Amino acid sequence: MRLIAALKESPASISVASNFTSACGLLYLASGALLLLWPTAVQKLFLDPAFVGNEATLTRLLGMTVAVIGWLYVFGGRSGGRQIVAASILDRIVLVPLVLIPAAVNGVFPHTLLTFAVLDPALALVAWRLLSRDGSRLARS
Image 1 (cartoon, rainbow, N blue to C red):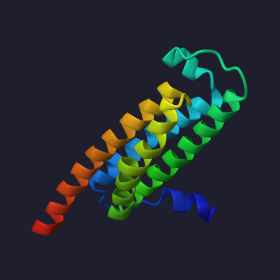
Image 2: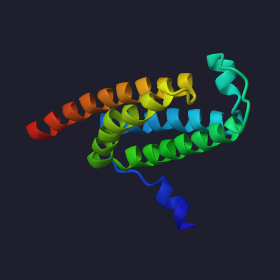
Image 3: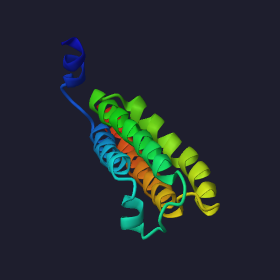
Image 4: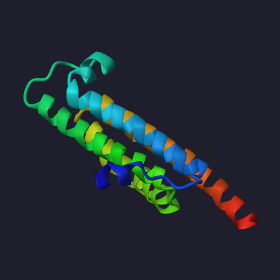
């Protein structure tokens, strides 16, 4: 099947920044799968109060979204392209905190969203540093 073969493709040489992006993708894929399959994990891990409405469904949607982002980061990183690393840095440093922090402050899954609002930009800064190092190596070659 050509689709599976395409997923297995990988360039001969992948930068450290691309490998890091793939590793972040695995983290997001696992985190998203956890929330998708076990929405009450937020109560067990963060000691949040019990759900009173449809929060479990919203947690599953959040989990699916994070898992899909992780899937795309895994394969974006495996492609070896510097563009996916750079694009992921911008949205993780700017967009993620801009959206998640106000939502958390307003009481929407505060522990979960604040965890992502801190972790995601921190990982993006590491990716930025690795991308810069890879870029300076390319310039010297």
